[in-house]
Length: 448
Image (cartoon, rainbow, N blue to C red; front, side, top):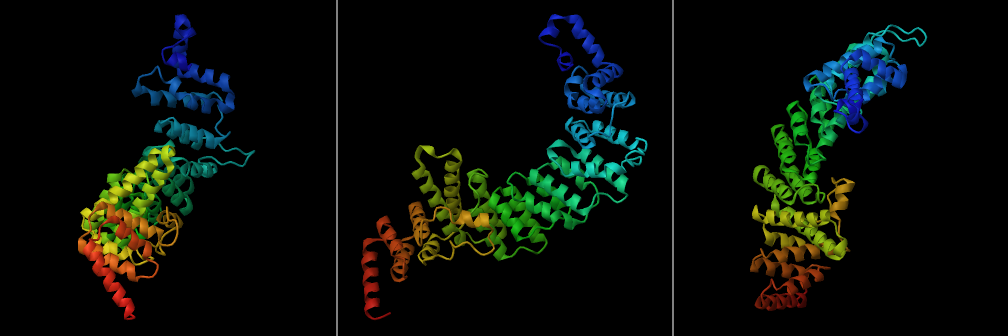
């Protein structure tokens, strides 16, 4: 049947009469229904027709396909095709056809079934609420906004109150996390408390390509918090980051601490989730529009870039394209922070305060972010040394800033590797080195 619907090939091409006969069958709902019933039996005929809908309808013009499928479904049921056997699978198969009319027809046929005394089933959709709810929270790649409205409308009609809170929130959460904007649009077409949308927003923010979904949730009243913003920043795409940050500002929940946390999450974000320039754009907009402090984020960005560079260098030919992209992403981000106003001299001074408080994962970090922040650390002080080497390789520090960093590294216990890194880099002028060493020795001699 599928071969005939597509014009035929193989044996169908060599036998025009056979091909024309099958086309005639496909063009007549009564004959097609009879064929389905004889091929798959009464229990599976309807589901078989839905599963093979693409092939069956291929010979029809696109404008007529949905109507022809609905007529075929009615004929199958009229001729004895069953609906009560594996009802959930039938509903799911109708959803997968891509025709909302097929879903509407299944619901109409179910609601028209007479009572079944043997199983205690009443008429209407009441006995199928569990199946409908299971489809509602299933794979949202199966259905569109129209199908979502049909499912929710069917549950509301059967229960008089609509899906349970847990069903609603799970459906919203799954649609948001998967980025199924069509399904979410259908779910949001019903009146819902805005507080139900906060958790779906939290899950959507974890993925970089969820800008449209996030905009839909925010427009319906979802309220983001700092953790939601950090999730978006960790993913790194500028569209969700800016949308959530501005929503927090409008709600009065964005302060300097939250902005700095968000920028820290951008610098510690997952490698390869977005293109390098996109993560850098997120950092730039947090600084320019929300007032985040780029200087506080620069040491962490340098540490991440150094760790990525070291990993790629040590992996040799075995390194993946994603790891190379992660290295570029971290290096571009460090450069971007300097471009938007980070003070490299202040960052040098912070790194020479071993252990640097700017590199330690803050307590509000989750386990994943904590692991990312520690990626590449080889021991106490090593993370600071790598970050210092990366920052010095950028060549953006001033002579006075490098000298001040060396002076601090010489007097802070445990910072000797940082002092050696500063001396090896050549960032500190020779005359400055002599003066600093003399000052440090004199200070130690006087007991300071």
